[in-house]
Amino acid sequence: MTDVATAREEALRREARESLRIGTKKDAVIRFFESQKIPVRFDRNEAIGEIHTHGGCAPKGCGTDDMLLGLRVGVDAAGTVLSEPVVMGMFTECL
View 1 (tube, one colour):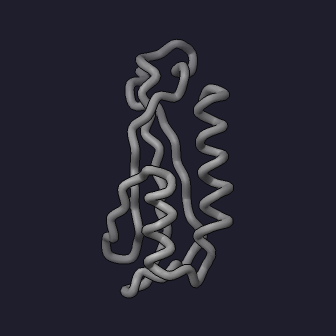
View 2 (cartoon, rainbow, N blue to C red):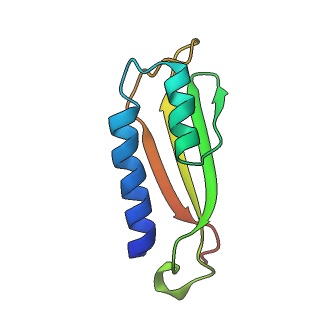
């Protein structure tokens, strides 16, 4: 990934670890996703959100610089965080 993409992904990873600690309640989970401008949905035992963004420049010149940045965290039935958040970034147009 590029420096821009890596910086955005690392910042999200760091902020998610700080804000989405085990025991964090659903309303705080929703606020965190909103603060990152990532739409959130609760699906079974996870809070999940993805955004499409531009990463700056695709690696090795393949495809475009369109990037998918995703965040997921395990939650219980009430939406309380049960596990560490996972952040993933990937270019969507690489060959």
